Image (cartoon, rainbow, N blue to C red):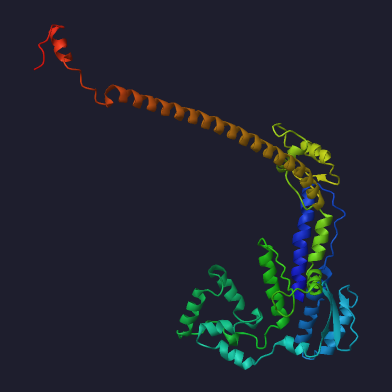
Length: 401
């Protein structure tokens, strides 16, 4: 629960504080943006020296410390803090987490936090000739031996990588002398409490998150039975509320969710107030003309961006859709006109082609008729004496025998 509280605080700072910083840089007035900061809960749990875990560690290191004395100290030092909740039972205290109030039983809490093991066994392991065992049971102040050292070595190699296992195998098979400064040089009983180990691990995690660019993913369970196709609305709503999604959505609605730059806004929505072929300047004045023409109210101008509410986008889209529908009508009319022209041209081309084919067929028929009359059929034989008359110039011929 403490880890979730810390991560939720980091989420608030990363999302909302970053958003407010963006407004500040752009000179935007955003006084109406409010969010519930759980910093007081984080301070109640992890504060130093007066936090739940700090008091628990302090009491665990005392020889006469008991669960009851720890509870008495929490009431004395933390009862007035807003995140502390009074419990009805004698052996419990409460914390008002961001997800709801939780009661914690103190019986056995101190002994579990001490994490006391056999000091003799720990010292014996630190005397081992195997360097890996020495690292695992290293300084008790590190809270888990060589865990921090292994983490530092794993930064370059990716943590529990193949190189780590290869190194472990080499050390297990190698007998070497124990390094200087072994268990005898350490203070016996210097074991860390579970609370201090947890806080160190959480601090390490937060340092990594702060140095990176985190992406937040909220996992929501549709049901508690892990069954497919089963959606329990009440269960989902509770998770959305406890994980801060509902609050995040409300805050995003209060702020300016859409923040395009001046040039991007003009290029996308210029058609609302200007002709498509008209050249305009991509500055705040042009953006103002477009917004006024669209009837948008409640926007703000930054130094380089237009800050719009989430519903402003829908209003702009509705304005654009009018031109989109008009463009669709014009497109349909243009396509129909082009189709009619194409059909007319194809008909004319077809008529010309048919005429050409008809003329070609007529020419072929005429050619065949001409060739048939000239030499295509054998000529009839000449009458008797026609050849001699032609040869003799028309003289009398002797009678035929």
